[in-house]
Structures are given as structure tokens and as C-alpha cells.
Length: 142
Image (cartoon, rainbow, N blue to C red; front, side):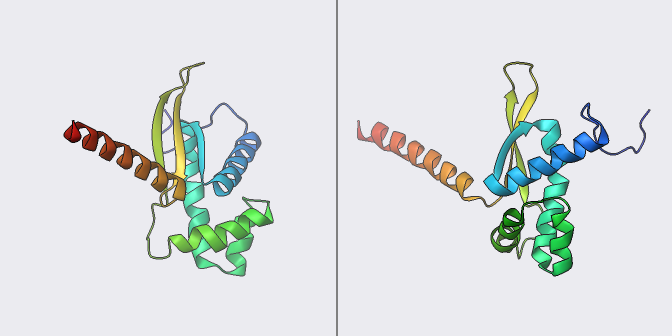
């Protein structure tokens, strides 16, 4: 039994797993929302949370720590200058996982991993709210 052994192996070697999470973290910072399997999203979430926490510190040492995970300097700059300041007052919980259901090909459980206050999510929620409002108006108008 794997008592108190943290982390999923995901069928990869340690180097492959590290490269996978570095690439996914870079994509998350770039796009602010990624679609992946639920297991990968659950493993990536702590890395993303720690990177944002480092971004809130905004010191040279914090930038160097994040540079170990994200090799693209532009993405590190985006994390420190745009993403982290959004969460200045928030004590944690910068990301959310939204389950999407099984993937068609192999049945793997899929999910979105996104930052909590990303603009895309808010606009999507507004669109859903507006559609609901239009339907209610048309029913009452008939």
C-alpha cells in the first residue's frame, strides 16, 4: 500500500512528469485556462497556487524561484505583473477545476483548470445570465 505517498505518477518517468507540469503551467499562465484530464489538473493545481503566491511576494528571489518552473521570461512577467496582483487580498485558492465529463476516445475524465478571476469565465457567466434573462422576458411577453 502507498501510505502517505503523495502525487500521481501518471504513467510517466519523473523527468517526463516534471516537463509535463512545466509545460502545462506555462500554458495556464499564458491562456489563463487549460483543458486537461482531471488527474493532471489536480496535480497541477498546487504548482499553480505556489507560483501565484510567489508572484504576490514580487521579489527577485521569488522571480528566480518561478523561473525554475516557467522558462519563458514573458510568462513570468505576466504572472508577476498581471495575474498575481489580482489576488493581492486573497489568502489562497487562486484556481478552480471545472469537471467536463469523460473524453470521447478513451473515457478519461476531463476538466478545465483556470484562474478564479479570469475575464473569460466572467464573460461566459454573463452570457449565460443574459440568455436566461431573454428567455424569461420572451415567456412573460407572450
